Length: 254
Image (tube, rainbow, N blue to C red; front, side, top):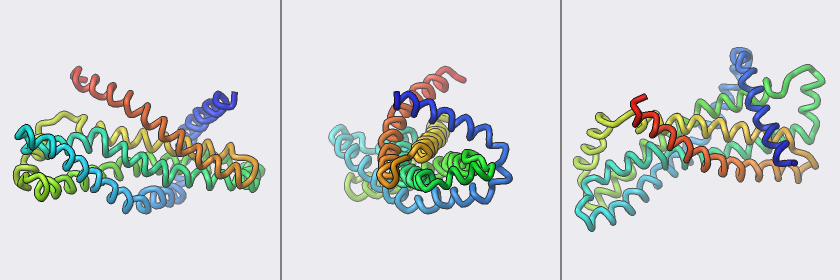
């Protein structure tokens, strides 16, 4: 029953936040603050993970491609892998671990210290004041962080391709540029759309877990831990379904 209640509460929080989007202008300061916390402060670790992810992709794929004399296509593989799957996926995992758990801990602390109750006594809706700005901020910054991760991942892959696989920069980037000019919209926008959905999932799960925290510090820790686990699972599941839907839609000509 607890799982069913938690799922229903989380869905209700999401729709309540959508309703309170009408208060964007009134809450613009909080939204900008959350964009800074979720986006700017997460940028360094996102760039580090992005560049090393691209380097790993390039190295492991390049070893196999070199055996079949296909190493000239290494840039193409790194580009497609980063933009469609790995970039959004890794960025979401970073945000779930760093931002989602922090949201749960922050709101959980406010819940167990009765600050949420105080807001309600003052006729301030917690979803309007606390949840909506966080969901909107993460929905905005997650695609941006994903784009940065994709970019530095492709650059990191180029360095590895040049010095460890033996693919010249010119060949690597020539394939990247040619494919980008001829590829369908799923290459860039599909991955960014995934990033936005992942950001919403992380924020909704984090806020829901935090608002349902109880039993003091132990409950706050459990809320943060559960946020990371649930967000990881939902990201994995939604990633598969979104990949299938996006490919079907664009391959059908829609």
